[in-house]
Image (cartoon, rainbow, N blue to C red):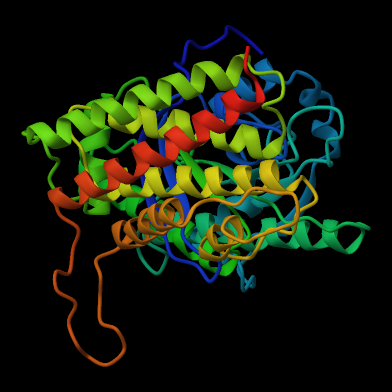
Length: 426
């Protein structure tokens, strides 16, 4: 595999939400090593080019460093969707088609462009690995697609490929499970779409990745989140962050915080750090819901550690943490076999229901949880019309709303802390 590349562990740049039929879902942008985000049951999408006999690329090499067993399965990767001039899913321009014909018999190349899928892994912490095998960007001219149109086509084709494999798995399973965690590389390094030295081009790539991820989550709301990972040793992380925020349209960050807001933020950060420390050392704090909750605690801690606070970002991360907290509390109070509801709101209501020999969460804490849910929904997008063409007043969250959010969050985190300590007195 050659020399190991020194790439930092993936660092979260920002979080944004998208509304779905099953509630808000997260899109998270990261900078660094894609392999550090992979967890049990993760579905991963990376890219390679046709001008190599085997899968290659930085993301592939980092995955092999973490899971060397995957390299042995490379001959078993199968084509899911193939690009061609006649394809309705991944159309190919005339110039690219001529390139494919020219090199189709070259043993050092692998044609046609296609999306490949790995075998289903049982013994390692990867559910499925998808590889987009495509041509480099080539030229954009004549009747061919523009560069950004080619990039859009390539990214958009990933979704039907993943859903086809997911559906096949569900059909052959006694207990069908939808995918939940998708890790997506930017799919632009080896292909050269972001190598033109233009920040405008990077902005288009970020916007396309965000638009695609939003569409995927709306079409498949069972997916919990999509992590989009970027890395280029030749680019500055801060410049990338600025371009990313500009392309997504985040509001100006809050730097000069009033004393009350600053105090509450520090209190929330302290509670998060206490929870991380206690959860990690607690033997009974295990399982899928516990892992998810710990992940969300870590993410909100990182968001609050930055100099600038962005209301959308804080609201999104705090809301996702609250949703994970609600699910963990429900299973902890009522038992692992409890039937969770289909929405965040109904799961909060579940915590307030009376069940024989089981405690229920107080009405006032239920109201705090509902407040956090509403603030999350409103941080995902500006409050818009209610269907009767009447405007909402105010139509966006403001600095004062963060004070409300932090106060509510501080209280529910304390409830969580007390519950864990109650079960683990030592």
